[in-house]
Amino acid sequence: MTSDRNPGYAEAGRSQVEAAAEGAPAGSRLTDESESYTLQVNGREESVKAAWLGESLLYVLRERLGLPGSKNACEQGECGSCSVFLDGTLVVSCCVLAADAVDSEVVTVEGLEPGDGLSDVQQHFLDAGAVQCGFCTPGLIVAVHDLLDRVPDADELTVREAISGNLCRCTGYGRILQAVVDVQRQRAGTQP
Amino acid sequence: MTVARPTTLSQAVDALAAMPDAQLLAGGTDFMVEVNFGHRRPTDVVALRRVAELRHHATDGDEVVLGANVTYSQMQTELAEALPALAAAARTVGSPQIRNAGTIGGNVATASPAGDTLPFLAAVEADVVLASPDGTRRLPLADFITAAKRTAIQPGEVISEVRFPAVRGPQQFLKVGTRNAMVISIACCAMVVDTDHRRVRCAFGSVAARPLRPTEAEDFISDALDWDTLDAETNAVDRFAALAAAAAEPITDHRGTAEYRRHTVKVMARRALTRSLRA
Ligand SMILES: Cc1cc2nc3c(=O)[nH]c(=O)nc-3n(C[C@H](O)[C@H](O)[C@H](O)COP(=O)(O)OP(=O)(O)OC[C@H]3O[C@@H](n4cnc5c(N)ncnc54)[C@H](O)[C@@H]3O)c2cc1C
Ligand code: FES
Ligand code: FES
Image (cartoon, rainbow over all chains, first blue to last red; front, top):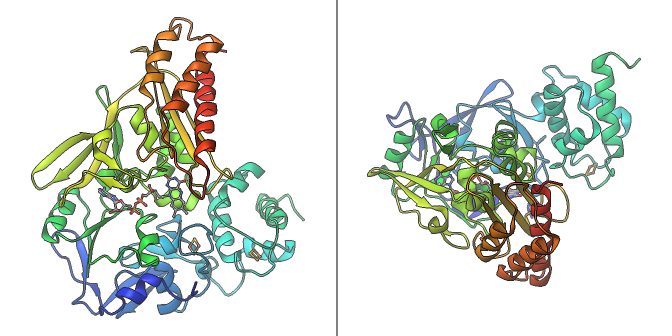
């Protein structure tokens, strides 16, 4: 499978352009006549130009907005490597229609830490050796942020359930689980 | 191509009327996979995600109402006490990411033989409520799902909610798959032991083209149960399980053989009933 696009695009990509028309009466809508639409990604307004409206959010992030942190491994919701926040909710971006993410706030792995540094989850993944090939890592980082923000003291079973939709073919998950515990300890102030 | 983003049901119905070829999009977990693989090429889309009124759930008199946009994550948490079997079914769907997006309306509309909410909805004899410019109509789920992945939905209609009688008594959901997450059912089972009406109702998924109600087995065990003590003889439980297995119409596919599926029906029928009875 190609890693750079939703294959549906190859078929329907001929149709041009699209985007945000102003306040149509029956709710808002995007149409072919418009030139671009705007997504809010990591706190910034991003303009998406000349895009087929059937594109997934994952495709738009990677191929149109230069945000390749979200990985494309399956395009069918199975692997979790494209996980992002949509209005604060953890979802797989390959199953989101980008044109339906207008008006929503998207946060990708690139936007978790406002500065240039690493988030605590990212740092502990590195320190614990939870990263091997790294392909699953961005999705796991997003999923772990989601879990620990909601359930700071999650027990192991809860952690396993929370990351059950994030497949890693390298690590065997042991070090990933260790990294999560390390973040929990640091956040709780029980780790040196 | 146009993507409409209505915020009310009437706007959604209007948008669909204005674009008769439009396809409805809810959580996208079935829809977008088909688009990504080129199996679905929408010309126009009516996106339902913002229609807040479809996200509600309530008990309306003796009836439970679940809006079409209710997600698996909502079922798992907000309905865990009221509808434990539905909540258990929701918890087995996909992954947290899928459960945050996927909706009951999408599951009903897709009408997959493996749809995990469908056995529960069949067991409680749910109706599907359809909204259109002409108003609303109600169809029993058994009439709504006409075949595997085929429904009686008409152009211009939106599933607005599912409704079913509130039911008291133990309920169970069981699912067989290769792991405890991210699996499509090889077979699944929902059971409600309706203590008010003294009736055991159950349905099995992935063992027929549509959710399967083993009515002969239900009749038998509803008679055989001692409803005052909520108890049954072991041989009655066995007979119930055998009748349920005999009713299944399983096929062999890449997930499992017909023989294995029939066996799981027997095991799940016995287990769901045993768990519902007084120990
Ligand atoms: C990785 C993965 C794992 C999955 N695991 C499971 C599982 O374990 N069990 C299971 O049952 N399913 C599973 N699914 C399938 C899917 O998540 C469910 O069927 C889900 O309920 C679909 O809902 P949705 O809101 O995402 O629908 P969408 O994908 O948005 O739509 C699905 C279909 O329903 C139609 N539709 C949506 N809403 C309405 C409405 N209100 N009125 C009329 N038509 C409507 C759409 O037009 C489309 O045809 C899985 C999917 C993925 C990608
Ligand atoms: S690429 Fe989205 S879940 Fe695999
Ligand atoms: S580190 Fe390679 S897939 Fe997880």
